[in-house]
Image (cartoon, rainbow, N blue to C red):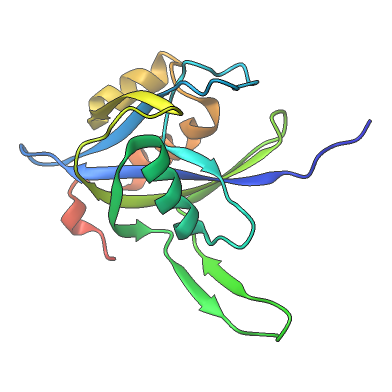
Length: 170
């Protein structure tokens, strides 16, 4: 039995301030036409595979645009720095918010947190975009209505992130 190599998936915890205080997280409905996973139709974070020669933040910017038509205002957690250690390597060093490995689906999810501006648009990969507050996220987690790879990411966010975006240190 041969196993394909695990591919890194960038998962974007897209946040924005709420008008009444606090922050909200963007979720979308998974609607890829060629989705061969058991998760088609699940609510999920914007996410996708990191391409060759792409840093984590480059992949996050690309995936957010492809799946929601949105742009990153700033990365709160998970920004890249570059390191030159050898003439044969080009390194981008990232510190994701959390890394989650799905050993059954063979993915490694690297979560970044980004402040977003604008309104999400339906695309060929995702639709039903909606901003959720902390209470709504807790309800979705309890109801098991989320893409499994994203649940530990959202759980850590709810348990450790400051309520106000301005409390983040960019």
